[in-house]
Image 1 (tube, rainbow, N blue to C red):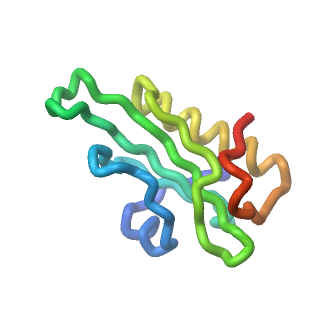
Image 2: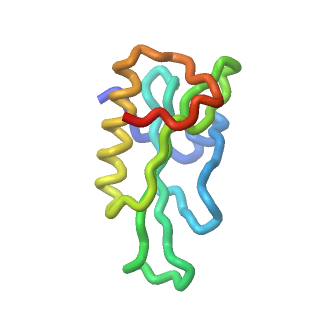
Length: 112
């Protein structure tokens, strides 16, 4: 698998663009081996803090022509952390299969 689980500290050292809201808590961080793509999974808890109403999201960031990360794909309202991880891994593999190494800004999310 070309994507590796990494620590939050290492993820932060890559200077990602944070797209999560204040109501989301990042819980897992990932980097593709060459660090062209990185990603994270976040848990969202409703305003009443009821864990039964939580849902999950995943975000994938790619490097632009200046080497800075920005969001290239994201999904929200995922039922479980495991499902979010599966979607993230699948999308990273799909993006890598395109051979693209630079993800210019302004193209919007790259969805399959």
